[in-house]
Length: 380
Ligand SMILES: Cc1cc2nc3c(=O)[nH]c(=O)nc-3n(C[C@H](O)[C@H](O)[C@H](O)COP(=O)(O)OP(=O)(O)OC[C@H]3O[C@@H](n4cnc5c(N)ncnc54)[C@H](O)[C@@H]3O)c2cc1C
Image (cartoon, rainbow, N blue to C red):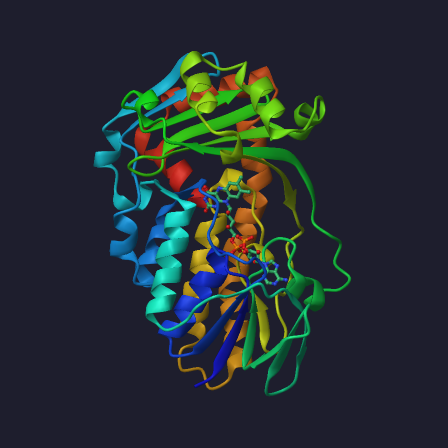
């Protein structure tokens, strides 16, 4: 049986490993962290993510863990309701519905399915370099350990070592101009029966969603200048930002433990014209990092895994199969990469005029079109 070496046990690496195992490959997944458990923040699962999860055989495992909001409000930070939805999503086609999950639940579903196929993630191994011949790929780790396989999949995130080896002259990822704060809490009673709030104000976007039966996930999308205008400690940033919001918002954020909040600067890269070469390719953020404003990073990583598994299933020429995989994924992922900065500009604009047009559009647009804009950026 041919062997695939997968570097990185994030959503992209786990999905690729699972898809390849289901396609009849031997799979080894390597992770530099000592523990593969994800931090407990949430994820929006767009319809394409759900379709990919179904293809990976995870429909039931995921159904028990996801929440699809039916009561939602779009607000200004002062609490003024721009638009309220109540039960509308019942009438939406499944292809326009957005669901939420906590990351540990998604990771657990993927790692459990891999374990059921006899694959355990090999932790504490940081990939450093590879040599590829016509027939094999030799992977080296920082501690001198090596592994040999038929193909190598770089699923090692936006600061990918495998990508750096494939494209040594590429400039590093650069700041997008945005930061994100994420938090999770169990103060579910403070939602008062609403499953999701989306706040839009000058220079700020924030969301609060029920992401499990007992858990809330919230995020803030902030302009880099605003974060840098004071101390960049997560608790100070959150306190400064939250002061601009209504009492319900503040109560939810204040109910979040300090170690359940995290601040990240967001980076972008120019799209690559080609991802891999020979027996090596990339998936997920390593191939095509997208801004979280698209809600598509994990979804694209899951789709990559499915398409990769299809391409390599029964492939007699793995090199050709990898190029076929890349040819299918380059276009769609490039469009979402390009959409990210545009979406971030609309949701976090400081322009009062643009903000007023955006809010008026939200009030006027039919619910089906608004849902589609969230669930299928770029009309996918
Ligand atoms: C604030 C924020 C909110 C987001 N919200 C959403 C959302 O709502 N919906 C959505 O679909 N997406 C969302 N995303 C995007 C999504 O989280 C990412 O696109 C997705 O997790 C990428 O998965 P990945 O497996 O490609 O990379 P990662 O999750 O970065 O995983 C890479 C893995 O590789 C490991 N690794 C790195 N280097 C090495 C090495 N040299 N050797 C071995 N292992 C290595 C890392 O430790 C890590 O475990 C969000 C992102 C952010 C920052």
